[in-house]
Image (cartoon, rainbow, N blue to C red; front, side, top):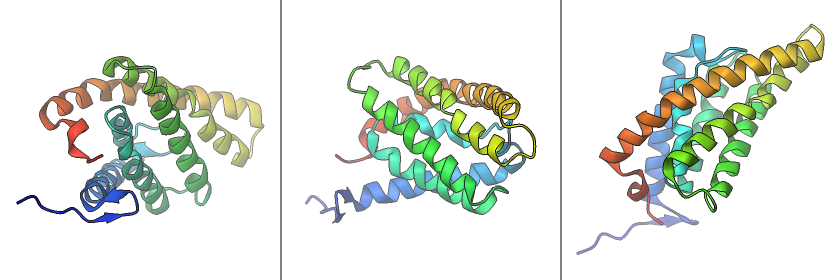
Length: 177
């Protein structure tokens, strides 16, 4: 006998549970590594979860909720990190989800995703420069450069990790729909 899965809106209880787990792990990793998870140079290890949308766009919700809650509880730059950090994640995930229509190879899409997230760190650089007590443009360019590189390093390191995890867990099949 097949078990009936409850739905709320377009999301099944199973998908909500899995996205909640992803959000929780994102939050815990960010909290544990808080000293390097925020600022003009950040190595937010939890950003590797951004690659999950390569496998299924429904991971979007868990990632965004994780970013929101991590920023809410651990950022020193409230409320701006809630706005700019979540905007960065939503825009970047959206671009990658949209690009999935044309980029079919998993590895190529992960590289694309890493570049999208890294380039879009200009949003965080705007936040840092705007609230800096120094001249906007020098702070912006310096921040964007360091943010771009730190995000790219984490996202590139995340590619083989997520690839190997997918071989074991099959991210395509975990979520329904």
